[in-house]
Figure: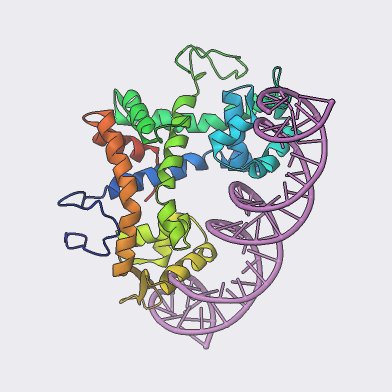
Length: 161
Length: 161
DNA sequence: AAAAATATGTCAGCTATATTGACATATTTT
DNA sequence: AAAATATGTCAATATAGCTGACATATTTTT
């Protein structure tokens, strides 16, 4: 399977010049999928207890990490619409995990902060993930962290966050 | 940003006996999030043209990778319910990207295969992701692939796939 | 001061992807 | 013959995203 370079197909992709890139890296693609699937499943148990989902986790995480970040910042980081964010953020505020403060310079802005409870929850969620990472690093061997860090950073879009 | 390894912070978590695990690895957690977010966004453009989503992508990918895999195999890999799979798989079959063959030993089973068109689409979807990986590897430096591979494998749950 | 732009919030409706539960069919195993 | 298994399907529900429209408060521009 996939041994023949005879692919021809529709040449909608002009890029294919010569012996170009016939080798698609399925192995890493798959490993990345499984790694992320299991990585994100870690906090699910904790979230479920409070009636939260992954969307709440992401919001809580970033607000915790960057205290005082505005709604616009958050939207930019998460790449979702404000309507999508609204419900989740409201629930986190109503539950007492996040609170808002009007911006000191621009009072239209809402600076977001985690409460004490929010910080505690954020850490509880991060812990199993962090443990998983630490174990994977250990199994990988010395120098893993620096290299993995550079790889992951390289996987992001250029202009970004 | 986040250059200091000096994290200390509030010691609300008592767990820290000595210099134990006060350090939650927020940096890798975040990098992993961004990396995966951008990685999965690559094929979206192609998918949208055909009215497909990421669910279709995943199904097509695994069937292409493991020809003859059964529905049960697929459910196990994707970790979704058969009802969730049903619609997506049906659409891929109706569109001519996947076809089914009754199992030769056990005729209750449906062995799944990508058609010629399915293979072409699977490859078109994998290509930008593969390119992204290759570029990230290059930026990371020599030895990256082996190390990243081991790291990602280490991030998966033990008993798995 | 008036108008325009901006940051946020909210209402309403839609879509994609997942869930659970129940039941049907064909086939294999007991 | 009965039970178990692999698959398919119907129905209802949940989550998390989307677009479009409009409201409010505030800041910037004219």
